[in-house]
Structure formats: C-alpha cells, structure tokens
Amino acid sequence: MSTYKPRVIDKLLARKLQGKGAVLIEGPKWCGKTSTAEQQAKSIIYLSDPKRYSQYMLFADESPEIILNGATPRLIDEWQLAPKLWDAVRFEVDHRKEMGQFILTGSAVPASRENIHHSGTGRFAWLTMRPMSLWESGDSSGAVSLRQLFDTPKVIAATNETTLQQIAFLTCRGGWPLASLLSKDIALDQAFDYYDAVVNSDIQQSDGVSRDAARVKRLMRSYARHQGTQASHAQIYKDMKTNDNETLEEDTIYSYLNALRRIFVVEDMPAWNPNLRSKTAIRTSNTRYFVDPSIATAALGLGPDDLMNDLETFGLFFETLCVRDLRVFAQTLDGEVFHYRDKTGLECDAVIHLRNGSYGLVEVKMGGEKLIDEGASTLLTLASKIDTTKMKSPSFLMILTAVGGFAYRRKDGVYVVPIACLKD
Image 1 (cartoon, rainbow, N blue to C red):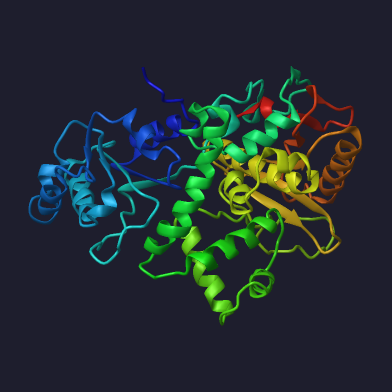
Image 2 (image 1 turned 90 degrees about the vertical axis):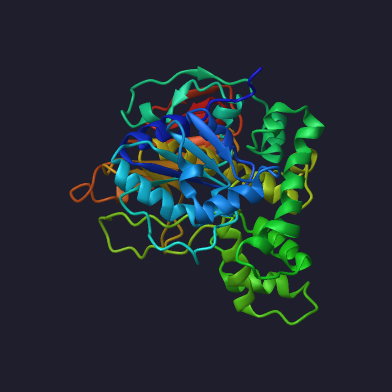
C-alpha cells in the first residue's frame, strides 16, 4: 500500500518538466524530495545503492550515458555523489532537445562544485521543497484556499475543530513525511532525530569544515529563542558568548549560520519594501526562522506540554509553523513571503507577494477576540499607508489563528482563518 501523501509541489514539478530539460529538487533532509520525484519519474537510478555504488561512480567518470539512458523523466537520486553528472545531464539536454528528461534529487548536503563547469542556466529548473504543510500532512481541512483569497471573496465560511493542544503537537511534530505516518510519541521523536543528525553530521558535511557539535547546539538554541525576530548576528553572538568558555569570534557565527542555510535548516525571511504614501524608513533586517518549527522545539528540548505551559513561547513557534505553510502555498502561486517593519514599530508578520504584483497581508495570532482585533488594526493601518497610485491595493488582509471555531470575513473586510482550515 502506498504511503505517499500528495504534495503541493507535485503540480509545480509537472509544470517545470514541461518547460525545462531537467529539474533539480533541493530542500532539507527528510522532507520527501525523492518520494515526490518518484511519483513522476518513468525510470530511476539510486546512486547510493551500496551494491552498485562503486560501479556507478566508475560509470559517472567514464561512461555517464549508462547512468543517463532510460525512460524519461529519469530520476537520478543522490546525484551529488557524482557531481560530474551535472555537466553530462546538461549535455544530454542540449542534444536531445526535448523537455522533461531528468529529475535530480539528493541530500541537503550540497554537491562539490569542483567538477561542475556549467551553471545549467536555460537547461535546469530549480525547485525548493520544504517540510509538509498541515494541508499536505492531512491536518488541515483545506476549507479556505489561499489562491481564492487573492480574488477577494465577499464571504468565506468554514468550521474548525482543531484544538490548541493539537496545534502544540503539530508544532513539535513538524512537517516531516515519516512523522505524519507515525503514532504520537514516535512521531515526536523524528524532530529530535533530525536535530541530532544536523548537529553531529550534516553541518560537518555542508562545506567540509569541521565544527564543534556543542557550539552548533548553542547556536541552534539561540536561533530558536530568536524565532520570528530580526535579531542581529551580534545579538546571537552575545547570546552564545555567555555560554561558550572558548574563544568565540563573530565570524564563526557567520560561518555556522551559512552552513545551516546551505543544508536548508534555517530559512530567514527578507523584508518587504512597498511604496508608501509618506516617507517612512523601512527596516531591512531579515526575520529569523527555521525551515520547520519542530527544529526549534527540538533545539530547546521542548514538547507539546511545554508549549501549553508557556503560551508566549508557543506563539513564536506557531508563527514559524504558519510561515512554513505560507511558503509552501505561495510557491505554487509564483509568490514569495516577506515581512514588514518600519521605524514607527508597525509590523506585519507575512506579506505574500506574487509575480504579477498582487499581494496579501497576514498577521499571525494565537486566537481570541482581543488579539484578532489587534491584528486587524495592524493590517488596516499598514494597508492605509500604501500608495495605491504606484502599486496595487492588497488583495486581502488575513489573520491566521491557532484556534477558533470558524473561518470568516469581518465587517472591516479582514479574513480570520484558523491555520487548520488553510490550503494552497
């Protein structure tokens, strides 16, 4: 019986295969890259197969056509084990002159560029894959579509039965495909296993630099505490310095964080820079996020009960969950997710900006009438500052909540949507 749960990126992969000769799927370890590629591949070669590994490496050097020949799209899994295949794939794409020839997937650890001589521009499409959204893991009803919100519907209506305790569990479990298939206690183990793999192995392989595991743990704990903030490298450095008995240079923080970015563990959010009616200085620092909230809870050793006992901390990690889901959904809409903050202190948690210039403003709140009112006030204030003679008006204003019995449209036009009701 197949355990594959359809992913939002499935349709995007199919589209990219129609327009490019090869597609490279990148993303964090364990997020389901190979399983997703397998659904559309007509033939597959697993370079990491221990029984054939030596032979495959020989073919990659001497006779790459043996690896590349097969029904298309042909999936080459763990391609980074033989980086020379990149140029071989590019050559085949040029000479076959057909679309959808190859899908390349691999570990989050980047391939060595030493033996790669062509960028792949015009031949390859790049797709970033992230852990599952709640819609993909089966934990959202999908009653409200983000795509449809861009049409500014007059009415939305949905019920929500997901409790705060369930959201706490889903935050700690994360969007790892395997975890979505396991019972509760075992499912929670997956994020801790992922965290251990990053600290003890993956970060060491990201660029061949040996890094101290204890220091990586301190960095990830500091990063977890700064989720959803614009904390500077200097702040993170100061945070780590208090618990680091050895000499710690600020450049070391840059090196470690860059390594975590290379293996898709952290994914910071850039600032949005709209046209405003008045000259207001916009803060341009990135907002700090892990690619999945479960990495942050694992770094701090937290479980669902801990979040329920500290709702302020819970709120920070819930925001990371919402950002993860919005990124997954925005990708299929040809959009990106940004944050907004100006010198007056006005902030917006997420701005979903599409390629065609349409955008939506989003505030994340745990729930409750008071917090929802505060979020609506923020959104309406920001919307009023935007110079609509130079850019479009926002397609929608939305408050994403952890709990609440309903998804609905307020009298002021602001949508209120529990995260367990949202889909792409």
